Length: 290
Image (cartoon, rainbow, N blue to C red; front, side):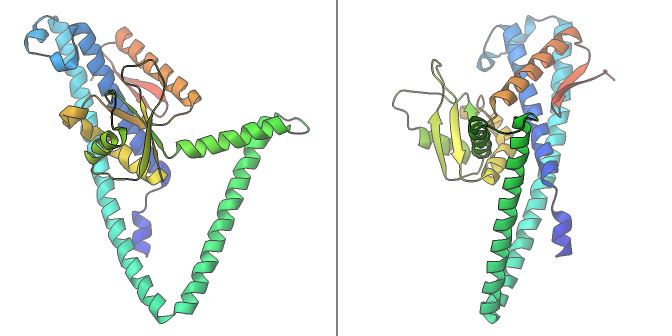
């Protein structure tokens, strides 16, 4: 029991690993876009002859940036491999625990059923209490110190809580080619299959006026979403999906903040090309060249 507890990482640490991976993936896409823009061709059209045109300083800078991204991706992959191994160990420990509990259930059926019922009731009560507390904090925030909260404010708060819960099970997919009469569920299943994931999901195109509109995938649990996000870097090795990018379903405020971060990252790369710039912990960081 104690060994399993030591293996469990805090949820915040796992999400931090995921954020670092997402930041590195996005910086790789930005680097590829910048190079394609200077070469004046799509990434699929890159050839050795294309790279004869840029000057030696430009090529040197590209090589330096590519090497930095490669080393950082290697670190991220190593961290994720360690995380996956710990998950395997935890899964084995959980399996042994289930077998032990099944034996106890056979020997003490009535006692176990009562214990299970009590545990479920406690969990439900704790969950309800937690949600009530979160709701109360949001209501206080929206009241702005006023004497009372209007019905409209309450509706707004309740809607924001529901939307936030919904987004925790969603993914947004960019770059997935769109065709007339497409079988979107089959296409998404193929995409997720490349990540060795076969969850139950609903998929729909969102937005309008684009040749390839983004796809919103709704999963049954936030755990399934988390598992998929951990594996998205594999798509770069799949020819059909190498230009596909999977990210969390962010709120408008989160998307606006992300857009500003990316813009700041590009600006710093132009103003200080000899430094290494990357997004970490919700801000742009810069390091001097060593």
